Image (cartoon, rainbow, N blue to C red):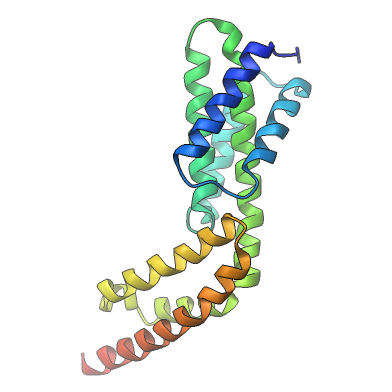
Length: 194
């Protein structure tokens, strides 16, 4: 693949930095952005093919529940796919380099999301076990408001891991387990009174 102009590279990096600053950022954002620039120069795919690969990977990531285990990763991947598609449609055509780099960045964010899911499962096993029990007891159906509060806290722990704050997520697990245990008991009472 041809080397992209410094102008296109600068525009791409500025766009990625601005998109990262606009929202929450995962711990590996800068590394992923740099890798995507390097890989864009070595790929044999066209920008259109690279975007299609990213879209397919995104669909597979949703099926693997990465939108739950790594929502920030998937958000950044979706932003990159949108940026790639928009850049490809814009004129002048020398911006295809940006489309290519953004689509590769999306693929990298998705690959990293799978790693994040593994980190979540390895480090937050206790709350995941309690969540499974709450789902088995149908807490989201029986006590939806209470479960929504728990789910929000759980997703907050997942996001801490995405941001590289694993120790904080592990510490945050302790009070959440206590709240989950209370909700399990409340759900059991609801079941037996129904």
